[in-house]
Image (cartoon, rainbow, N blue to C red):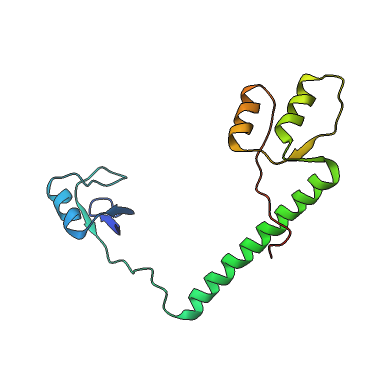
Length: 144
């Protein structure tokens, strides 16, 4: 795919559009299928456009560092959620679906909430029964 900056010769406005190739642009223009987004004129031409290319390794490493920083930030936030869950809810391990049903169907059983492990199928079944559950990503303590 190629992104072209297009210019209308009538209203002089610029806009961008994507094409599979330069030949495709010419073919569509010849068939009068390319028109101005602003005035509907068919007098649209390609303008010069600079490609978006990384010019050196330092730019690439900056982008990599930025991605790593965002990942670390995400992991920090997830750890905060996990700590809140651990401190405020009861861990029931592999028995999550069973315990969730016990709480839901036994109005006498009181709890502040539970967390544990369940398969996607178990969570789907619980939700179909009207038992509100959520799947959240869990970062293992051993991970950096």
